Image (cartoon, rainbow, N blue to C red; front, side, top):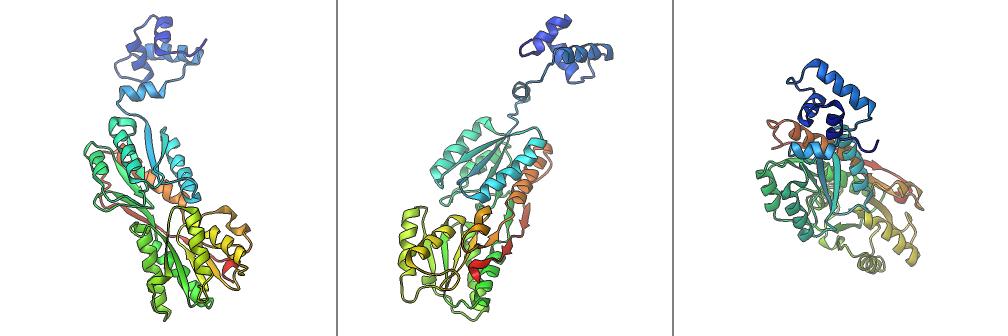
Length: 336
């Protein structure tokens, strides 16, 4: 038999569809013998419940939305795995939405979610995000929202982050201990919470290491790969070029290798390099890249766990919930 529905079960048992539905749900309204008949017939006909139909009856989508700036970054790929590990256990689907670092696209996605497409939202905001109006509207409609990695001010909800300031401090301090005195910091979207924290950690380490901070050593990169290559080549061609580089996001680390190869610069002899990166291939670069490795899977799992606590208990407040999961400095050959 094809897809067996409750109506087919009801016809076979000569019962109403409502009675069969209640029996399958173990309702107290249905007698034990009737439940037994229904379950035996369901087993005989290989009946499988339709999760979408049942969710519509409960006015639940059984879906959570994960809103990300990109997935090319291995951090977000690993975070999705952590989220799905929890969602699958709860019987939920995960809808991944990409903003491509555009606030307008993010707003459009959030407006779509107002229609009930998802029961809860996990979000890492764009580099352009400044207005939390749509997120606030979702909260007012009872849709729980949890930030992870990238957060936004102006909305009181849970945040799952890593220790960006301390991690950047450790990375900078490591370069100083390796003899670097002119350390460039490759930044992107300084308005982002993670960028601000990483720059602060960098500045504090310089101060503690007796090195004067210079604004010119913070290099404002963009989301244009070709433009970043041009900018890096210009910086590395100077007579007073940096002797150390911290790539504050994953996609800025590999271009440093490319520019050094084109200019004939040796890593780590001429330039020592650290990247905030979850790339599995970091250990296989030549030379192997020293990384600040973020706990992406754990952050995704923790963010999803908080969201499902809110979905399962209306009295559970996401307000003021902050989880900070430490990153790890993995020293490899690119810093000598």
